[in-house]
Image 1: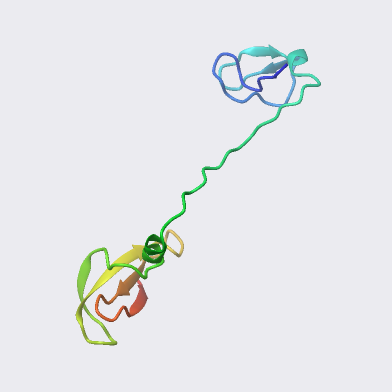
Image 2: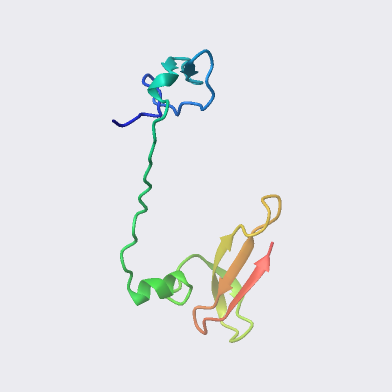
Amino acid sequence: MSVNPFCQRCDSVLPLDITDNAVICRLCSLSHSYRDLLNKEIKTTIVFNVRADRSAAETEEEEGGGADHGPMTDRRCPKCSHEGMSYTTRQLRGADEGQTIFYRCPRCKFQESENS
């Protein structure tokens, strides 16, 4: 016999505390007999989605070695002096601090970052 650890009315998880021989749902206040749950084993299973194999080109692009995507800016490459670099931004530091901007030269693939 399977035991349902969820409220029969609202499907929320039932608390572990027992009051007056009953387990009371904290969301809708429905009372459940503790005897229904007594000495029962509850098992759960978590299934993670397996990611399909990706091609080498997709992996390389995710790691920053693929085609140059993203917006361009009028920044000169310090390595080859090419005018125009693509950029992406990430929030790597605290939420109260600025973003980190990653620049990439489409010609020589030089990369640099700047904390704003």
